[in-house]
Length: 77
Image (cartoon, rainbow, N blue to C red; front, side, top):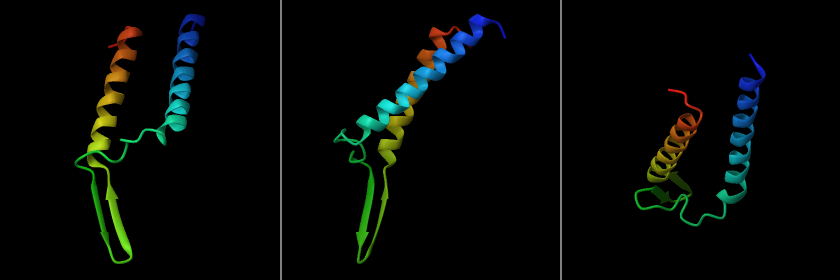
């Protein structure tokens, strides 16, 4: 592995770690996250069930777009 490839790899890993840190810091402050229409929330007696279907779909699309942009910038198929 040459220095150019190693530098790019370190840059990508650093950006991924910074992105995850930002998501953890801001994740609790996004009021709509986990409360979108279509998220399943059932409560009964002493139990409850919560499954954020639409939130998972939105996050999946956002991550897919982000990864595709990153791969396009790095010129990798």
